[in-house]
Image (cartoon, rainbow, N blue to C red; front, side, top):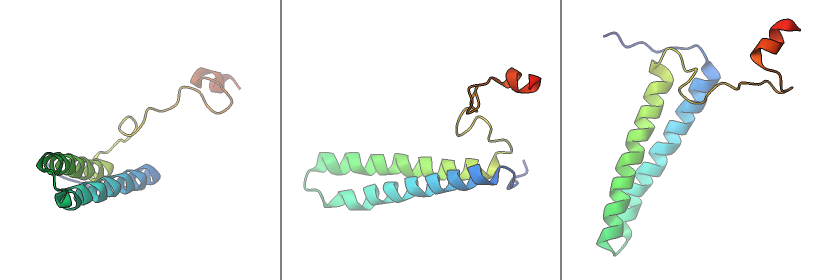
Length: 93
């Protein structure tokens, strides 16, 4: 399997990367910042939340650059444009 970085849909790829970095920051803060709490139950929950969010951040960054078509990955394309027309209506005008 060949891994290739794609550069089409650059705005969506950059926004997905920023989202992934945000997840990583929140996850790392949860991993290392939650250990200050005196309750062991809260420390455990904070640790596993951090692990989950770090995995989500790595996934978001990886998908943003390794998937060739991001059409349905981050959000569904709108069925109507800003004027309320359907895709078939644009073909007639």
